[in-house]
Amino acid sequence: VQLVESGGGLVQPGGSLRLSCVASGSIFIINDMGWYRQVPGKQRELVASITRGGATNYVDSVEGRFTISRDDSKNTVYLQMNSLKPEDTAIYYCNADVLLITMSRTKYWGQGTQVTVSS
Image (cartoon, rainbow, N blue to C red; front, top):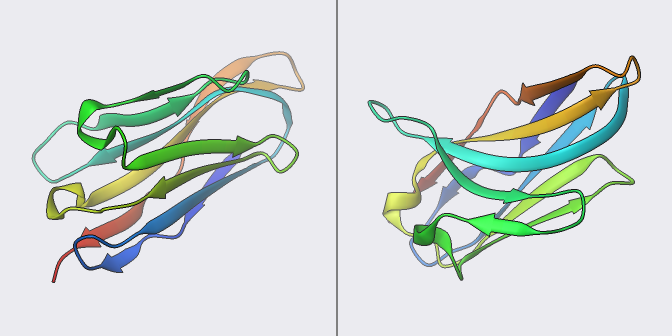
């Protein structure tokens, strides 16, 4: 299984970006999906998650500014990021809890996409 992120880049404070993550491979079902972020010298932190049923969870610092969504027909998870702040600068990684066609269950990570918020 591969997770490929896209949509990162450089944006001014107050701007918006939309991240996408597409999963491909021997997928039977994707359970929870999430977006994490990491800055140098700090632990990777969960930014937002979404269950297969659509229940969402956000870290306090992005509540009201970021929206996570998914399209199971495309095995894709999105992160709409609005009102971006310099402290949102990080490498963003997607994560998926996947049930394979072999009926084994594994969590996968994408390669990461850089988001830089700066004037």
